[in-house]
Amino acid sequence: MSVIKRTPLGEVRRSLQVAAAVGLPWWWGLRAGETSVGLAGQLAFAGALPVLGFACGLDTLSLLDGDVVTAGESLRSVEGYLLASRTPARTRLCPLDAYALTDPERVRRWWLDRLTRVCTELNRIRDAT
Image (cartoon, rainbow, N blue to C red; front, top):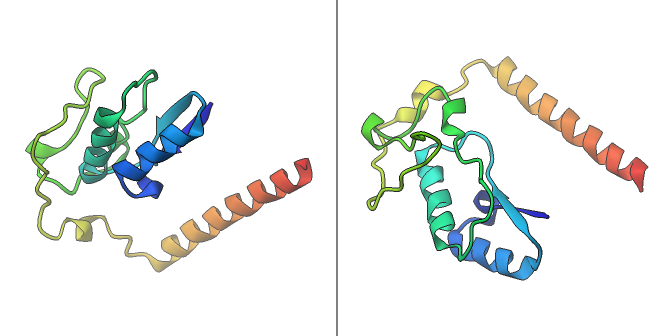
């Protein structure tokens, strides 16, 4: 089984091309923590697929403290479903300031922790081959 992540591929069309080229059963996932803006793109991808045979794990907005769109346009799941809108969500003015990390030490630790995890995984892969 293959995993396709639409966000790094950048657009729905490119994601569909990759999905068609894989030639294997695949599951479609996303990075944890997509805002409603990102989730809207994920839903567009899901709607463009000829077959969607697996649950896709899109309910990650609940992992965030807030969203960058108005509350009424937020893509929160209802009974396990995300309801797509026909119009783009409107972002709030300057919402990111409320979520900015202001502690430089915390930012540094986050990046160092991430780098350590990546190095550990690369070493594990190298040692396994």
